[in-house]
Length: 312
Image 1: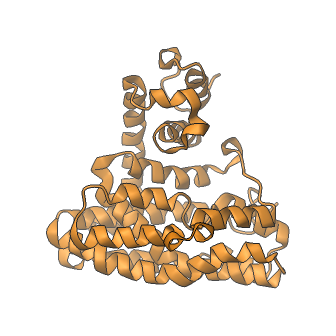
Image 2: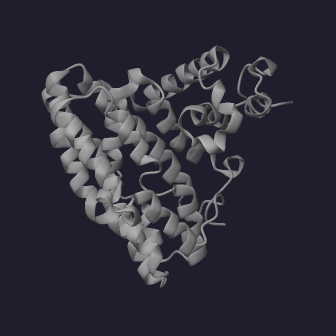
Image 3: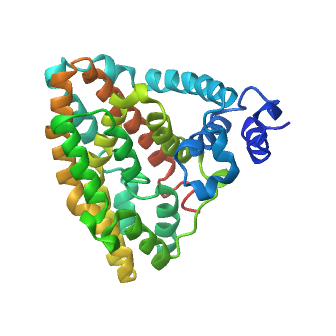
């Protein structure tokens, strides 16, 4: 029986959404693979999309995307309900954000990497983890649309750091490319990714392609900044212990050093001013942070060293 994700891929390859015959995904994995193809239409590089890019606004695909997202959002809300329902008043929403960030800030898998993982274990994990900010520069650029004042300036500063402060060789995506080349990391095809990794990546697409979810995007990106520092430090320790090539270090060292500052500034200069201006955004920013924390939690549970998916 044909899966929805396979049916969609064939329809996109032919440039014919009307060829879709499957209406519902088989399971969460099929849904994530389907949504990622739809998110790619709006977020992936043009040279990768080819002729498919003209379908980005197709009404049939838009209706499918919305229908799948409604079901997924309901599941996410159900999973994080206590954190969001119990979120405090707007003037202390940032405290709820920090509370979520502190919880499981350093999953056990990172300590395992630092202390005992083999080189093969580390490379396998990094191939699926994707770094602390897969596409973070584009996400920040989209997140600042329509903002003003302190929040917009903070996101601009964050983006400029992602751009290596104007130095091409220090752009974070370039540093990640250097890491990949030096370590021999191979891109894992989406069909071979664990479902939890697919959903973790797809959350970026959900938030970045739905303008109404901008407050949730602010929360999710802030969560990434708040949690990345200690995780990246453990990866650096693993690279040092295993004698990695020098080009493997700059990407994770950069994030280990600057992300704690980014997280603090995101809360002080973006979250607090936004909630002060838009009090109704408080719970929604917490909601997005909780969504990010939940998808991270599911991924790191299967990324433990005992996981057949990653540790072999």
